[in-house]
Length: 492
Image (tube, rainbow, N blue to C red; front, side, top):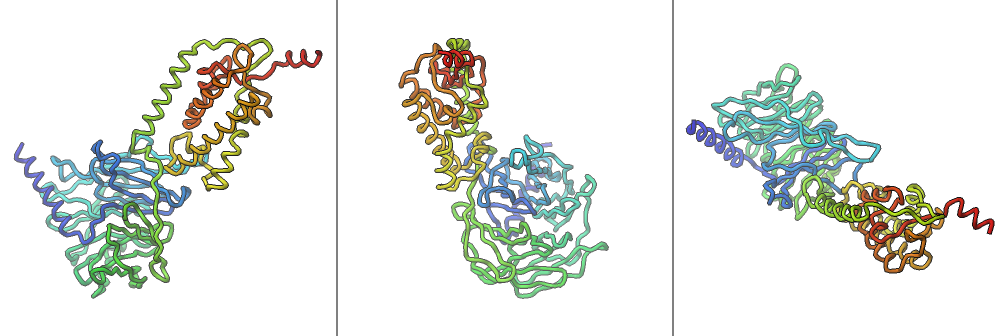
């Protein structure tokens, strides 16, 4: 039994070495795109200490154009990925004791117009698909994966050569390969058809799938070894090494190959990307950068830096901070378990007027961060679900700081903010007296913490006095005069 495990490990390590030796361009990250989505598979230094060194990140058409957001993390790098529509497929490394069985997982992201966010399905992870089974005496590992409208197809490399399997009706089926494939093979897709690219140091042969098999190879000589390929519209864009530092880009179609242009090969790892009918190159230069490739005039010289959005899907720190703040609020509420009744003639300002007053008081801060600093409109909604990136948290923190400071100045002078005045409320002690300035300052500081995690403001709905945690900690209530008291004042 032990010898069988050792033999399996040797076989698996041999396959990995074959892949590494035969790879012309081994990028440290992977990228794939569809009409609305771009998926990145990236090294994840933030979670390496937790034994999850790889992260799956996503950018959607409706997101900020330069932001990608981590979604899932992995202990081992997935071996291949492909996307179509809203769906991503991943193949994972096989277990050492079962090298012939390759796990496959799937994830779908759909746009939710109610909260204006992409939501994952399933919510808590990735769904498992039927595993890929290969020959136990000659197991294979995925080297390429593409997605068609009918499902994914995976190219596997064995010690004896290559094999191709496609998922149809919930089952993986073998697809017969041409007999004349050369040493290095890559799988692509164009016009909804599978494409095989067979490359040597100088030449490349292209096979297109047909209903009866494969077309005879279209041979292109003297173009250099194949580096990468990505589907663009109905074509397949390929990158070949024209010289030690020069990349040639071409569009491959069933009728032939058209040159797009040449460019200097980036010093760091890079990949081609086809998304939304356009072609891009993504490179890693102390962070991801992207450049558009014009299909008519060739590569562009400008590079746009991509920013990583909220790491909530891969890092526990935002949740830890939120939990700590929640515990602080809970202690305040326990200490004020039985709020006292308000003085005669006063009623707590209802929740909706208080909410409207807060929006009015936030206007100066909104003007600064949105009109002057260009913060996005969904800033506050993202703050509620802890999904802001570093720049977004900066904008939101400034918004909260301005709102709290502006409100505190008004409350120190008039016991009310502009919003509270318009809504008919002001600050009072439980007994109806005026709160001290010290209490108002402390209340503003706690309010600042609450607004940084705005979901905690729900504490203001606690009856009977509708006090937020900041109110309870300082013995202050946002009150209005009762109708009886108003009538009494009028009669007097």
